[in-house]
Length: 323
Length: 208
Image 1 (cartoon, rainbow over the protein chains, first blue to last red):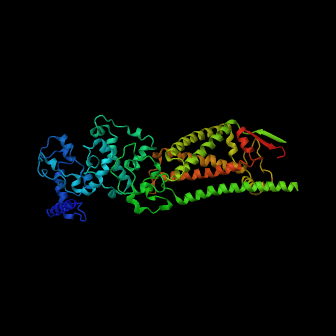
Image 2 (image 1 turned 45 degrees about the vertical axis):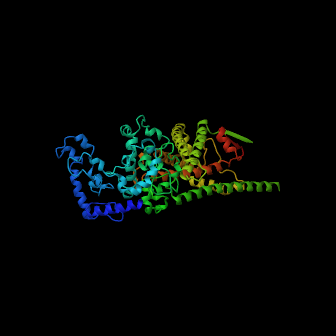
Image 3 (image 1 turned 90 degrees about the vertical axis):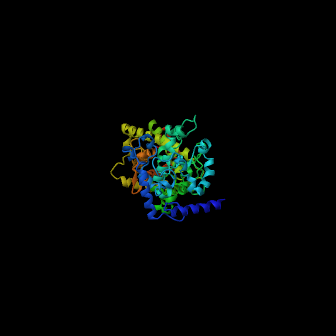
């Protein structure tokens, strides 16, 4: 069955390219500059209505601006996003070419799994264990967290500050907003006060600025990829030492895209972190630590030896007096 | 014949021991945080953070009280190395610790009501009290409120120089603490100086 799906996918990809479409994610082949340009020009047509500017000066006689405001995007953000090089029609397939769009056009919009089937197969079992699946299985989709018009892959962002900003905005977007939380949460569920439930975490808001919620709210594993098993507060990681030690888990998670830059600059362990964060216990200077430990040991041994010599000297003096 | 003088008022003794307990607490918890490791038997990280922060705030308050009380009572004068001949007297004190004490020589500058500290003590106590403690207190305050740290220094997180200063000042205070605890055994008897710090009375041989 899998072989059949893979074979069919290759044929679809081939036909798509042959028809001049853009398939930015086709494995082993990037889109040609011509294809990219074609997608960009095609998207301009969509953005005539689906960009914020259109709300000021609605084209095509659109009158329902409230409805339009729900389907506009920022062209700059979209262009920079992971899907920014794709033609809109890559996902919004049938019924979107003309205006007004077909009544059932939405039904033909591609699912994430249409392109990301391999990823989806891996992710789904993880997601099924997550707190979101437990409470919202029927309504929660990839799109609740991953806005395809906005999201950028961490490997492309590289800068941990940007990765944290993007990813935490997703979590806090709902968990720090009563309005958004109520939109997706089960009927009687009220949003827990986010600061209160994190009161145990020192400098809470500073943590959220420098590390992702998912550093603690996903299980630790040896795999570099983060799990989609989002843990609730009772299961979330509370062992600070996982990050705050010389062999910090942040190396393999938030900072994994900077692994090649880890050169123990100026003698610091995890010096790649220092560009954005000083992490107590993790960003230590080994040379300085060795000197400190040696000085402490020297003071202790020195005091001990001095004390022993005082005892011996006093004993010798007393022996001499007796003689 | 043993004589005694009342040397240390209650407030100094209270400050001294509270200061000692807080600094030991801060050193132990600070060590647990800095050298945190999943396999170590040190204090749990989050508990160490809570204790370190509480003891840190207590030390800041105590330090502020001490500076005021020291100024008002005139005790600050004890911390000033008196010229002339400060270096000469320091050298004599070092020579006593390195040599004289083994030969059974007498303390070169015995304690008097007017002068609690010898020149070396004045110099070191002044450095610890008016230089190292303020540095560790100020950097600790920034640590508690990292939003006041510079955003970036030489392309690195601005908290790095603050953390390094805090660590260095704390290390020097720890070294001083260890040496100070040992030197406290060098009175007329091993425990006489510690007794003075508890009762306030300094005992000495009238031939001193």
